[in-house]
Image (cartoon, rainbow, N blue to C red; front, side, top):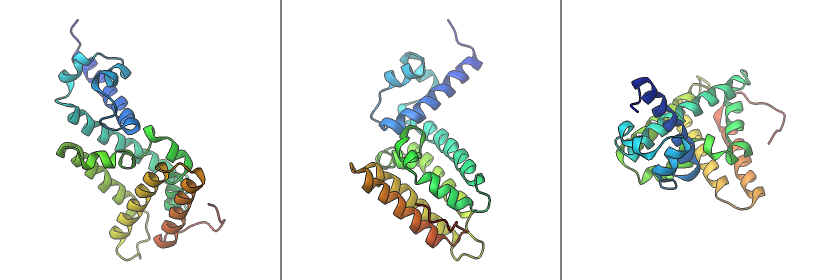
Length: 199
């Protein structure tokens, strides 16, 4: 039976959403097209009607994942309007985020895979990283010197800390990596922060 154009768009969106989560959970090479399409409730036969290649799907999935993560970042920052950067950093560098790889940061989950991927995936990742840095920069004090460079360093620390915290067996060491990164970012950011001594 022929699928309508509207239904084809719905199906395509569903595949991108599912792929965004599954790629973050398993890596680009950790799941095949058959399993990915089955997870979306579709057959593999329809894949090439919607995407030119697995890389095309992966690039779209990265873009979709970054958009979802940025929306969560907005929610985190809005949770403490007086200290939006601190709210974001604490939520991002939390054990909860560390443990929710399929819904978490695209770069932390897929950065190493992207480094070996084709240009379409690297372009999607680059656009996401630029958006992350711009987002962070907006919450740095206007008087801070080199706000862009500082935002870049904060984004790099956040992403690297999540990658490291996911890479060790010892839960105490994992949490120590996250907590140390929170302290360092908040000390260096110059942004307003709480005095409650939270870790």
